[in-house]
Figure 1 (tube, rainbow, N blue to C red):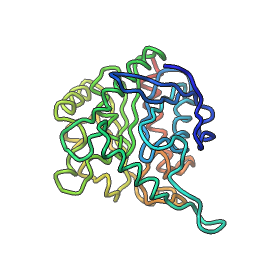
Figure 2: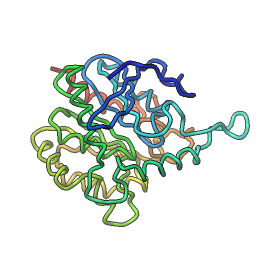
Figure 3: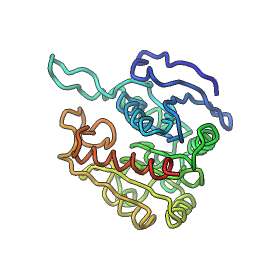
Figure 4: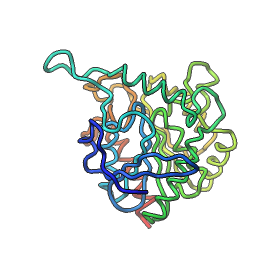
Length: 284
């Protein structure tokens, strides 16, 4: 790894992060890091490391962990929205930017998007990153958070014993356009069996979704409850709990649709995630 600074057009959203690169098996990617203490790998949602994802990383750093945000797609720091048409209007979804990011991710060899029962190749790189960060940061292990397109990646990383807590925030793959795809997630059967065994041995996994979010059907969470047992905690939030000022329908539980007020359902969910990292990574 070598230290650099973020220098794209949206750098201000990540000014407090250091930027490095990590290479494993001929795959090199940028990695944004903030904080000290045991590492938490935060794998961003589509379209990339948005300002809200960066803010979630700051929450992780604030509890005494190192937030590690790998750049997998999109433009780091770029929001998923554009200004409203008139002064005072709330932002509008930047559908062109999001669509272009999805298309590029769908054709990239690192990601398994259309097939079921397969783990994306990029997960090997993420596991290696987790092992590297554990060596760098110390502690009992590493936490992992996946969001939306990458929600299942955090689970797949948990086949490695270095992962001590996994968060699947609105895991959206495989795309749930048939009944069978609603009762599965983007892991190979072998990897899912390994994670299930680790859950039986005490690994905690949290899943988050908004009720009514068709991209993350409730049947997917029922499937995970069956496979992972009591090690899986499903947090399913009412749609009315989502940030009403967000540009898109309720989906992003820890970022765009967070209502950052004590006592709000989304803030309670965020606190549950951070408390899990405190217990698993800091209370030793």
